[in-house]
Length: 187
Image (tube, rainbow, N blue to C red; front, side, top):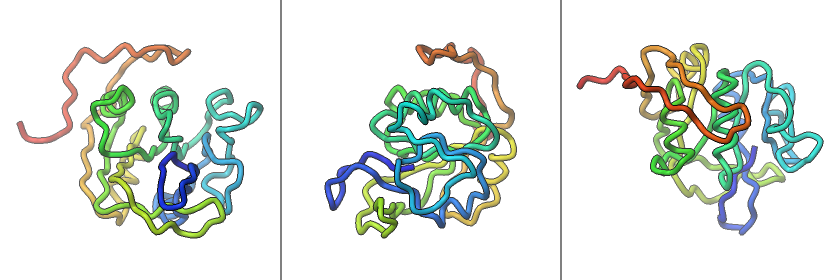
């Protein structure tokens, strides 16, 4: 999927580099892919700008890759938590936002990537800018294990167990877990 970021060519769609997808393994679904994508990110790719093929309106099945439009991360993060099986790419610099708080409360593991990602333009060529830090968020045990095994440099924080929380299916609000979340770090 592409992200919203005003970079060196002033356009809005930035594609996940194919090398990153390859490192993370095969995905069954990319629910928020741009309309034009020069490579596959998943077996099934929904288009976030399309009314009939919108990943927020269609069912999510299998292992999901989610690089949401950074202008509206919240609904994608909520759906990823409800689905519970996949990896999401988000900025690592916004933990104080609503979506940032939700992701940190609901993800099972967080790989804060060292360095910056060189995203790609819609034509597939690599961009020259690298604007902000990013993190990969794993949902589900298998995806936590993938983040443990990848060769991507960075810092991994993983929960000891998957916690329970209730999310409104309409995405209107979260009922936060009442227990303290242990990230497995010394106190």
